[in-house]
Image (cartoon, rainbow, N blue to C red):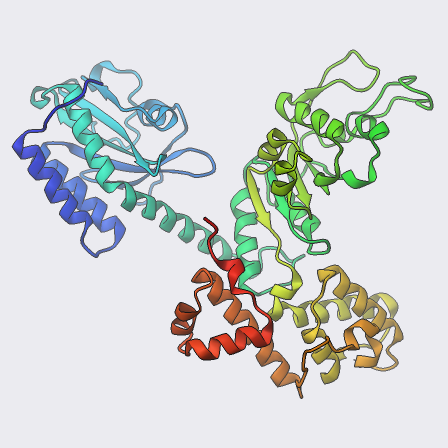
Length: 508
């Protein structure tokens, strides 16, 4: 597209009017509708439309239109589909001098059925925000009123640049609305998870966001946080739910067996190979393979795994045949793989191949409000399994659970409750039934909780302050303001509960 040195006075006036509209405080959709109206009145660009690019699929979903009735219908264009889809795929502007002579134009809205397409030019440009395409802006213009197609595209691109931030915010707004709608349709979207804390609701939202795609997922988290549950939830929420879910513990596979375990072998391929065996990837065809403890793979194993992820095919050990597989990969690690990449321990290309959509499972110590909920769940589970009458926790036992730092996370809590149910004599778990490590006071720390109410209040207070500090990036002054308190009180509480505000600050 040729460079335009200057716009006409009328077009500069139109750009100024659009900038004023976008600076007003009003709902985002209203702003965009007013921009399209301004384009229609002052620039002669009729039937303006704004589509938002879906972050997962890349589809261009029609969101706002002027002089086009889209109420009650949903219109979208896949990447490369029609003119809008091509602009979405290439991020390059496109212009058609006459709609009546172009086979790419789809007119899915039906807005041009009553007009002469031959007399209309169609203009379509990407909306770019911070180097990333977030939407598509398109409009018609009577061919005889077009100065040059390059000029009109340049002008429309300037409009797209002005509205980019608003479209970006509108995109986020729509994603939030969709996620809230998905959550509202099910009181608890994942019954296997027990947790109502804010941080776990964020995890649920991420699972729902990624489950319906084929995107690779890397689950980060400490040992015992429930990474396998996340992997299973992603599988069961995906179109592959009727396919197999194959779990592989990478830490348990020696280098000598890794190729055979993952890709299978033929009879006689090596000493002891008495019969043909299918590998884990072949078993997972049409479903999901969960590679747990992926950070424990040796460099040789990493290279072989990367090859199959790139090529979607492999050769079993000792075989000349090629096996093609359609498998979704979900991996998990309790290591800091970014540090391992920097140290040369983990392959950079494999890390980026796996870490397309990261999910961080929070440790139990950051889920204060979930501890008693989980404990009640495990009491019910093991009381039924062991045929015991245990139904509840005593006040001192609750105090012990809430005061403990849970280095082993949910798995440690489950083991504690299993033991307590076994040794409890009546219907109540007392503090003496818990492991000795939970009954010991931490050095230098005073524990003065004197009842269920105080323990619960402190647990929720800790969770509330942690969530607020996360929202304000560790700024205690802002946290105090949001909580209707003073900075001095928040500093005291942070010290009391051992909260580290520094970890919420943005690292530059």
